[in-house]
Length: 141
Image (cartoon, rainbow, N blue to C red; front, side, top):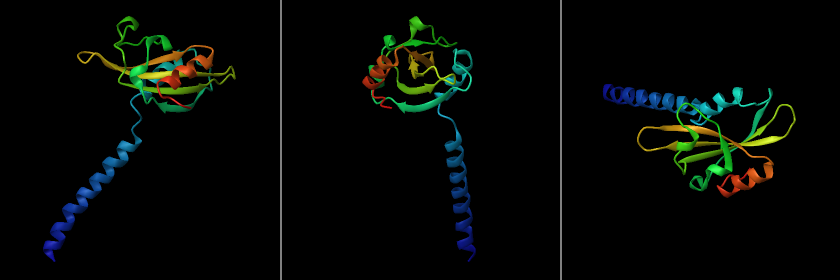
């Protein structure tokens, strides 16, 4: 009986730790959400705007600089961004003032040495052109 208890206690501790770690990881936000939250207040986005859809690009290596306007951040100068990005998320932002949706791209760039960060891009207008670009990199809303 003591052997059984001696085996069950470590197993229960390991199981409890596994559950705690899994639950805490599930609550952690996606890594692209931090730069998006920095962009939204200062990006001429009307109050009440919301993300209507988010899709991970199937072909991020096809993302080009001319598909959208990069928003400068502390890590990247827009003329030094290495392409193609490692990962791209396409977001459909519904403006709070009813002026129409806009497509945002949030992409992860790395020069494989010093800089490694996410960058927000605002899609061009009309939205139909940006939707075509989003479709070409595998973002289907």
